[in-house]
Image (cartoon, rainbow, N blue to C red; front, side):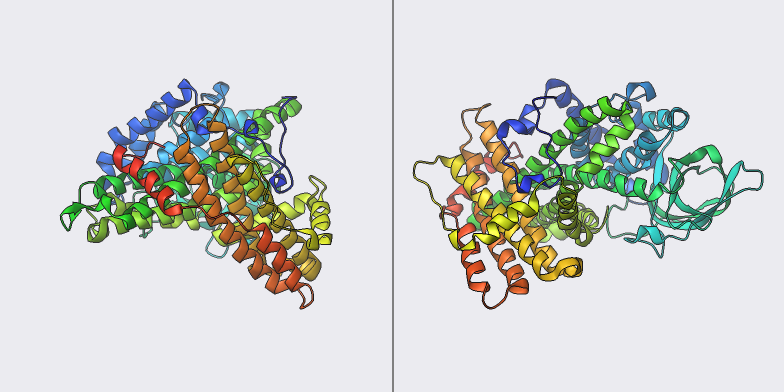
Length: 592
């Protein structure tokens, strides 16, 4: 642990990361690959053959599929051995999330159980609660659900009205209220329910068994996608919850809810990678079978552009997923040594990387939406037919931009959280920004002679970070405390931060790959295209932000600095994309 630099959340903006500091999927060990294969085999054997049936709101079928995954041990990946699990690393947990992400609505039910349905008890429960519930949740004997959202409390979770009052004998909390959009509601055995005790201003959390008198589950909602997952309202009418089922401390519920949302965002970032790989496989197989004008449509340049872009965006997003997963693993190890409680250490480590969690959630969900949309387009008219898997994938993908906090809220969190961490002194964001801002006239296009491919890309990414710091400084100086209300400007900065983090993750991955294999030419092509595109996004977003906070006197200098910092050398992105697409077409499956 002494030799590992524990990067703070958001610190990537001011710190130069090396390839040796990150984990890449090419480093998965044999055990991890076997676990991944088990997940894929389970989908092939148990999920795909039942998709049609389960999408007709067959609650019992979905529950039986979940229980079978528990029998295989897939529900205990993140649970310590003492509570019936396998105690795998966070990287391995994310790999399982990725592989099961290809399971359409099953993935939603499975991840809701293994994540938000189980881990609040594992992370915040006492030993008795863990023994009574986590052991059964890890085996699949119990199915879990998470009850936070209410009809009047969505994004503003703390405004919920569900209430708990201590009974006269002091043995139970009497729970009353209503929850909605509850995944696994139709068959869950345990519910993590958030409610305010008496007149408290903040939430507390409770473990509620669905068999308790007064718990009523409504019919499943009719949804656009993920039709196989049971999503319903749950009503609590004078439900007696034993006092020993208070989860964590009184008033700690809001913190639990936020922490679990960070975890959910990270796991979603991995989930969508698996779903995107499935969509790409469907795309290329169809393109290699469908003929128009006497030739396969996979030979057309426009189709190659689409398939290559699917691959590049997926590969870049995947790079970011396992980079932050490794950071979390390292922090978990340190915190477990410090506090001695694996559960608390795990959630503290996960919660720490709130900036990156929000990035993965937004980038990943929008990557999958792009990939799923292009999959339909590649299929043409057949893509609109319910006979094709891409039609289901297209509908299912849409919820990910709403799940775990909307993308609009997560974009704001990316910037706001990074700035708050810096204000606490966790890293010197504002000092570095001040230096740049005071030397705007000295910023030039600093092309260097003799630099290699990776040195050039590193220089570009450093410049992107400088552009971000300039915008943060300028916006902060102009708007002060009211910056939180300038959501358009925050969105500009968030876009820059997200794209830079993903580009840097991709660059570090490809450079590290050179130590594992001789041939990385196609991955250099991916990096070429990605950085070329990111430069345009940096320029546009920065200029939009500058237009909002600059004065007529400062604007020309700021524009010139951004033009220099977002400038990259021209590359032949057409040929680069064609080479990537040709590899996909030749393999007829995603093998990157």
